[in-house]
Image (cartoon, rainbow, N blue to C red; front, side, top):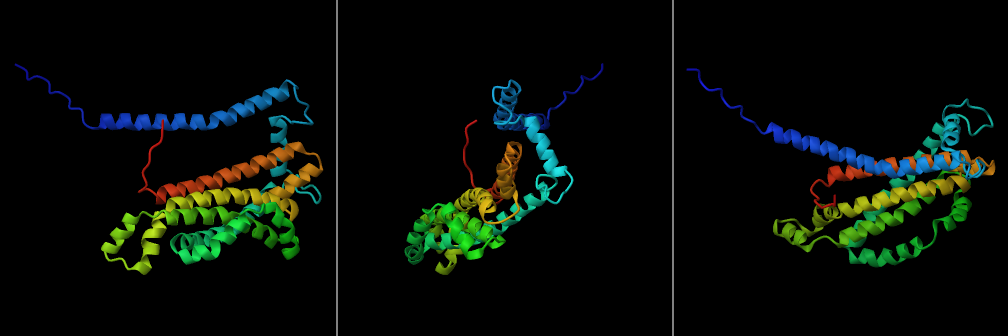
Length: 288
């Protein structure tokens, strides 16, 4: 008499496969939600221009903007044609200015913010002056920067660094002030000397606020580089945007706006990715 066939044992791979597939579906659905609004705006824009509800002089179609953008990127370089083949050059100019100004703002803002949040003496010395200066609109500093530095790279870097500094230092100081006392007591009980609490306890506890300040400051840096390139320096995406306005090239104005927005989004995603890797210990909840 033949032996009964053995039952096939289902291992843990099946639930693991279901979990992987479910995670992939969630990622795809989340990506679809993220691109839904930009896609809807683009479709509505094309529909409005195709139906000629708005004249092309007031609002060029997406295809017209794409064609002008293509020429701006890949067109032949000419002596006086700033709108042909100069996009990469202008992008690198703006990127270099933002990187330099933001690096200065981040180093100064994080260092001073931690000291303000931890030491009452430093807060008394700097907090009032910082809040006074950050209430002044950054556009008010443009004439001062041009007068001090002239039409030069240093004027743009000064404006970017000066404007980006304030959201960074304010967020970092708030994060340092909110260091849980239980962490400080635990560190003292484990033998951490008081002079090392700042680096070993306060700075790590303030990291979420530090990254929040860096994200806000970087977004403001992209705003300020456009202002600076319009008024204080030559070259860059802001310079191209202002030149397009002077020549009534709305298609290139929109191309410059999209370029700056894309760069701002990409740089923000880089900081967010870095924050997720460093703050893996931080847990939270989010609705579906």
